[in-house]
Amino acid sequence: MTDILQRLAAVIETRKPSAGGDPDTSYIARLFQKGDDAILKKVGEEATETVMAAKDVRHGADANQLVYECADLWFHSLIMLAHYGLTPQQVLDELARREGLSGIEEKANRKLQAREQDEHRQGGSR
Image 1 (cartoon, rainbow, N blue to C red):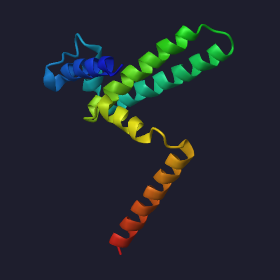
Image 2: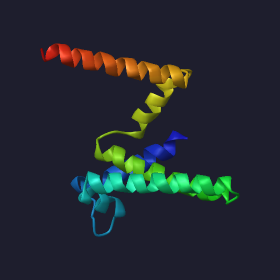
Image 3: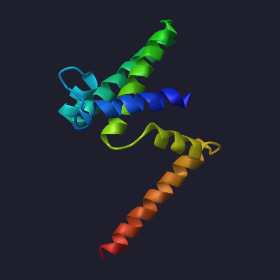
């Protein structure tokens, strides 16, 4: 299952202008050239389209449309990750780390870590 993510990530890396990607012939290179605002806007658009497709499925639309929109969202999320020097494997590792944790417990741990970081920063600035 992760092979396709790794292959897509590798293709995305080759499309970066710094790796020779040509914005005149590559949609991905064009997004990279436009910068993170364009990439983030596209991720937001795809997320909205995914939510709308899910609502349509809830009302009887073809579920394949939701799969199609999720694929677009994942694809553009991979571009976003690559822009920031991150990989799909890092996301998979984070999901593996959370495996077996209750969602409520995981959220409580994040809040505790954020509070500890805030206290550390406040203590360091005094």
